[in-house]
Structure formats: structure tokens, C-alpha cells
Image (cartoon, rainbow, N blue to C red; front, side, top):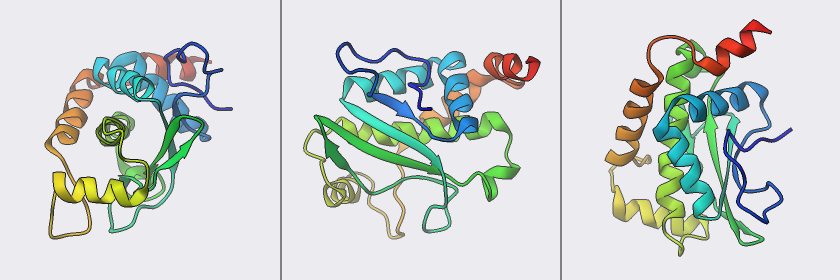
Length: 171
């Protein structure tokens, strides 16, 4: 089952726009982030507003990073589809759940940066965009906006479990 991470789909989309995952644990984290963090919720809204679909999946990123926006863009049916990968079996397995949600939010901010540029419709265009915007001597890219989003989301989530997670655990 795929979800829209706590926000309704745009009218006429049949529920296909938004932020999704095929992983139940990630879907719960997306719901928690959307429920508890105005910043996270705003990022999901921005994905929808920019005709984006972002999949967040468990996996391994290149270049020894624990989470990443893959350098691929698929244009289909008037949408641009992006993928975020979170290494939940590696480094992220030892992080607190709220830190993982904040990391997803950090990567969602990168997705919004890409979706805000209508000309980015290929992986090559995405790579060149970040080469110009966040040039670096190593093979990874970082932006102050994404760092700020992750930190802000983590503060908004507080110290304990999130409300949605508490409800799931109570079942």
C-alpha cells in the first residue's frame, strides 16, 4: 500500500501525487513527520504543488552517506518522480526514530529544490543543477536550506516519540 504522507492529493490526481513508500515503517515515519512537524508537512505540500512524486525507500546510497536523493528524474504523466534512499540497515539503524524522520525531511528539502526548477527533467539536468548550486570537490552535494530543514524538523519533533507512533504502539 502506498500513502500520501498525511496530506490529501490534489484534485483530479486520483491520489497519485505526493510522498510515498512501499515500506510500512517508512510510511509510519512519513505520517509522524507530517503530523508533528509543520516544516515536514510544508515540504510534502511543496512536492504536491510542484507536480512531484517522491518515493522514500530503504536502501544504500553511494559515497558512504546514510541518506540521499538519487540523481535520477523520471518524467511521467505530467509528474516528475524522484527517489530518496535511507539506509535503515546501516548507520540509520542506530539512530533514534525522530532523527531518521528529520533526515527524511532533509532529503525532502532537496527534492523540493529540484522540483522548484521545471527544467530539471533528467538525471543529467539534476546533476548539473547541484554542480552549480552546491559545487563541491567530493561526489556529494549539500545545501544550507536542506541542513536547516533537517534541524528545524528535528526541533519540531521534540524529544519523545511522536503522537502517531504512540497510537501505533498502543494497538
